Image (cartoon, rainbow, N blue to C red):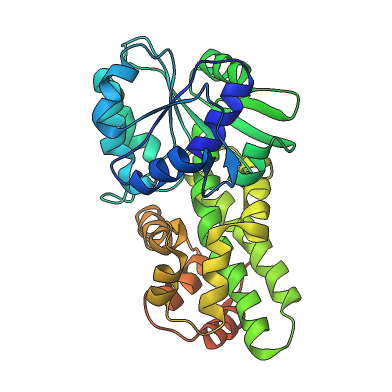
Length: 324
């Protein structure tokens, strides 16, 4: 997603440096050989500079805005590295989704202590990186407690086919973006069960999708988020695109078809946020005294060894409340 956003910012006329992490060596090699980003199957403009991890400092010293798009596991350390070299007045736009791996808290809560007054915004919404890079119509939300910061960054990134809306509801945006990965694993499992059995599970998928939005709303509301955020782009929209084509749904499909969850992770060879996200969501729900039965269903399969078909029937048998 970081590269996809870089491509769009380059199209908008900004001078872009794409900073590769220490794990991105194979991507750099592929781009240098072919000019094409291997995950996006899209060419990078010659005007986009690529900086290796050891050279970040030089690039960041002259940067007006930093965009961070790494996994939730690496966000805090990346944020520290970036802000140490970045000008104190330069805002940071974060396109990472999930919870802090150490505390299970929303990432915005964790970074607030590290920000030291720096403006931070979050870029969230229903996006597949390949489509974003190719310039197909896409809509996102930029969230910041300082709405002027959100507007400034949205204006910089927007184009006729990339629409960026703004909100001050950081909590609602973040909870939707994180929990949708867990819900997508559940819906994906239904596709895997269908594949394994030859029967359709469309009714079950619809029920899990709607219950996922209910649980998303419960958690967001408990943390101070607004209900309308959940039914918008960063809740229902992001969940829809992840269910239709995201890696968390693909992981769920493998598990539903009978692949061991850890083997499915190895097969994916990419970060599946919903795998650890279900445990973090359950911990947060326990602290808030909330009931999230769909999240429990996912956790029972991917972490406790429950059979997906048995766990799905158990979920329906014990599911007593479909309201917020």
